Amino acid sequence: MAKKTPPRKQRNRKNAAQAAVDASVEINSSNCSEGETLEAVNLYEFYGLGNVLQSYTEAESTDFATIEDMEKNTGVGKNSEGDSISLKDVSDMIVRSKGAGLPTEGSNYYFSTQQANQTGRIPAGGSTGSAVVNFIFGKNGPQAPYIPQLIHAQDGIATGAEYVFFLPAGATGTVDPSNGRKGQNMPVNHSSSFEITIAGACGAGESVQIYTASADGSREATGSAFTFSGSLCTNPNYSQQLIRILTSSIESGIPGQSQAGIVIAYTASYTADGTKENTPYAGIVVSVMPSALTTT
Image 1: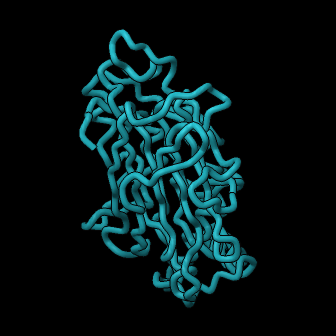
Image 2: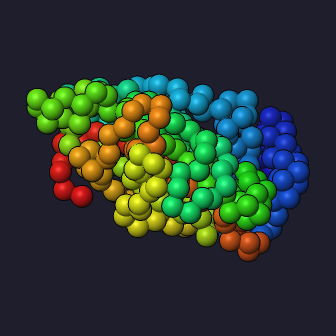
């Protein structure tokens, strides 16, 4: 006798199929299987930004070393053996933070506010951080894959939009010249730089670029853009990129007035190719951590 699908799973699958239809996601065009693609839609309908079980509220502070937070971030990313890994902890920040005696609290944000491109300038708005440890996710969050068509419905193509996270220079705290630290909010002996890790996979044609910004808002790219776009159903399904920004290279400025700081821009202008915009990806998480290292 054939094994029956439980009613709850049947409902979830039906709801996912309807959500795909509503967003014009063409399941048959996905590079992943029908089941994998529908599961990705279903997870987003539960855990994605603005949905019933949204993983984090905007700017929510959590202890990233707790079992609860680790479990929340493990499942979407897969290593070369197909095992689940945490994209948030891809740089082993938990072990390194504990080993250095550093706090394990961090603020969680989303690339959530769409802004018009302004070449060489910080787009108005976006998310602004206030702590020195931050994690920024795509709209899918850590518990759901990212399908461009489902989440953006071609808005990225239409507007060439950027989703921006801005960490102002003032977040480091008041500069203390007596010991050479950039700011009093930076951990002692870990104030020389910010370690920025980009992990996951974005849609084909999309990118994440890190900038340093001056007080007048002009910005300069630091490192190359992250553009990895391997699909969710490949192993590994993510890549990672490390960029280090020396705190000495960040201009000082008056908090609330200066635009000096670090800008992380996610350009959600994906390639208009049926297979690519309908395919699930691991999504993006960017971590920003204080560091003792001075090499870029």
